[in-house]
Length: 120
Image 1 (cartoon, one colour):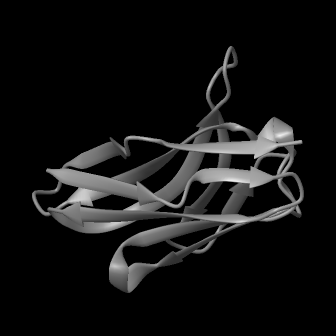
Image 2: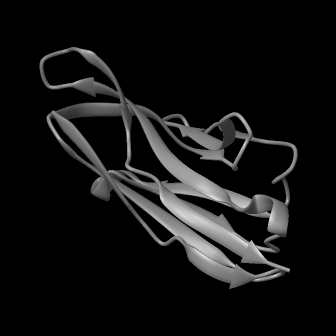
């Protein structure tokens, strides 16, 4: 069993900043990839940013230069620093972690999602 607990969403004005956090807990041997996906109303879910255990990052073109993903391996936590927020960033942001469990199983885990709303 693995749990992902997210925090940090909310309402912010355009141009503002928010930082999302996602902490993983449970039967974790290693976390291979952690990332943030987002889904705006009426749109499909998309990857916002991801970070591998080796330090490689992947960002959606729409957030490059504004969002920064980082992780604290000691805390099994990933962060998404979002600067220069735009109304089109409004979405439910969900944490994803690709984990190898203590039993050797590969798990693809999701958080419950946190709302980010950017007002114009």
